[in-house]
Structure formats: C-alpha cells, structure tokens
Length: 435
Figure 1 (tube, helix red, strand yellow):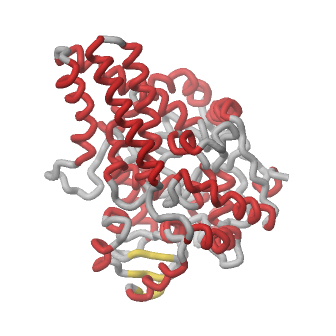
Figure 2 (figure 1 turned 90 degrees about the vertical axis):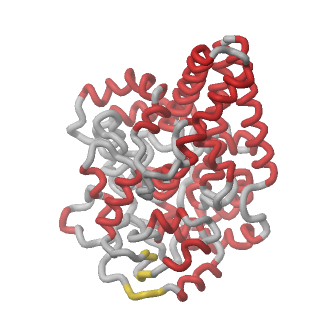
C-alpha cells in the first residue's frame, strides 16, 4: 500500500479506507453516501478534472435517468470512460461544464491518452461502430427462453411436489440471474428485471456492481470486495484471524444459500423514495404466485417449494459469483503491491481472470459472466458481442507488454479459498509477476 505521505495523490483509494467502510452493514445507499463524502464536489458531477451540472440532462440520458440520479455529487470518470466508447460523447460534456475541480480525484486509476485503456478504446471504436447498440437479438431470445423454461420447471415442481424438479428450477434460475446481469449494464430495459426474481435488486446492483465493483475491482472502493469483512475477508491482511481465514471455508455454503434473502433484508432505498412500491420488491414474489395459481397445489406446499428453489439458486450463484473470477493469490487485491502504471484498463486486467472453459460458446458466455476481462473494459457491450474485440485487446496487450492469462475454473475455485486464508500481501507488482 502507498504510504500515508501520499494522501493527497490521486492514488488514495488504493490505501485510504473509503468512508462507507466505517459501517459493518454496507449497502448501495451507504456506498453512494460515502463516495459523495470522499469525492467532495457538492451537487455536481466530476469527469477527470472538471465539474459538470447534468441536472437538465438527467431525463434525456439515453441510458436512463438512474445512472445520473445515483451519481450526483460523485466522480464518474471511470463510469463515463467505460460506458461511452464513441469519442463524440465528449462533445456533450462541453454543454454542461461548470468549473475545474479544485482537488485530486479519490481514485486509483489514470486515463492517459497514450495509456493502455485509451489506446484500446481507439482501436475498439471501428469495431463498436459496426455492432448494433443495445442487447443483441440472440441475447434477448436466449434470456427469454431461459426465463420461460425456469418458470415452467418451477410450476411443474409445485404441481408434482418434486424437489428434484425444484432443484432444476433453482439451477436454471441461477443462470437466468447471471444472464440478466448483461441487461443491467445497458440502457433501461425490462429484461434487467429478471435479476430481481432472485430477491437481489437490479437497481441496487447498478450501484454495488456496475458503479462500484466494475469501476474499482478488488480495491477498497469495491463494495463487493468489502461488503462484510467480518464474514469474508479477501484482503491479504497479516492480522487476519485463524477463524476468519479458515472458518469461512465451512460457513460459506450456508451463507451462499441465504444470500438472496439476506440481500433483500439488507436493502435500503437508494433514492429515498420510501413510499414508492418498487419493482424489485414485487418481482421476486411473482414466481411464487404463478406456481400457486398454475400448479393446483396448496399455498403452504407451494411456498416451501419456492423457498427451496430460491435457496438452491442462491447457493449456486453465491458459489460461482464469489469464487469464479476475482479471487486468487495471483490476482491483485488491495494491500498487494500495485502496478506502477495505474491505468484503468491495466487495473481491470490485474483484478480479473477469464475462464478457459467458457471462452467461445456465446450462450454460455451470456449466462456465466463470460468474457469477463473485456466485460470490465466495455460493460455496455452486449456479452455475446464482446468476442469481436479480442483481436484488438490482445494486440494492445502485446503492445504494452501485458500478459493476458485466463485460468481454468477449478484453479479459480481453489484459489478463492487460498485467498480467504491469505495473510501475505504480494510484494511484487503485477507487471513483474506476469513475466
């Protein structure tokens, strides 16, 4: 970590604890509140070293109003750069410029014009221009079919009282939720609400996942890394207790099974519209009522089957989501020696690993957080279109001497438990360990 003498540099978030971490229960609302405190720009929006007032643009924003409503009073540099590939978007900023920012950014990343990420974006621009914006037709068809199949199995499970069919329904629900994640990153659309069937909230996920984890993976600004450090501690802390290091190996399955319900119980409204009946509160209950209305079973038996389905899905989702892409002793975590070049794109590569097994099947890519490195680079590109960018991505890696190293799922799963027990920060920066 950087010494405290570097407190006023733009790299502060690699070592300084963000305000939201002062609370043990960490929510989307708390993360936003903490970021507004740390960014300290009042009621404006910051992009690089300038402040803008997008108030009049909120309801004109092509991606939907949530993104600007959530981020008012924060630095959105990472989100702006990664969500807008086309350079023409830069012209819109001029209309809303207010004044220069008075202090350094509270962020670990840089965006130099000759750096890795900006170079990659320039090379990606011609490819993006030939890909339709928004979700691909195949993605929409596939996710709708998965939704239909999942509900069908759920109704059959309730009608036959078959917990085996319920397991199948829960298994399919897991991949429905992961596939819905693709649509969550795009402009407002009804398929992003498929994620809400799980009891997680697509609106909250736009903060905790899209704005926090995606922008700052495995740094202290990543709420998914630090959501409850008294239960899961991924950071390589020397003072980590034996119980926390190895106990989490044994109690994690129980927590995974209850993850969806815990997500619902710990929810806080991120827009303080407490009287509004939110879609992410109603949607999780729809499968239960469909199962009851269509199966002919009594409500109590249907309710028990529904709980079983959600718990099965929650367990599989938790197991894969926590262990399958970001946690391994060879993957950068806050506390390890960071790369000298703090380029945003290099930061994504250091904190992400792709799965070797899931690299080429577009259907599996859509349903399993596939093409994960490129997804972190360009989150608003449909998952099934990301493969078009591999040639320029690999070319840019070669140009900058960066080693892109996917891992097998089994190695990532093993490495995630090694990381939970890890108390030795990596003394070598990623550019040295990759050689």
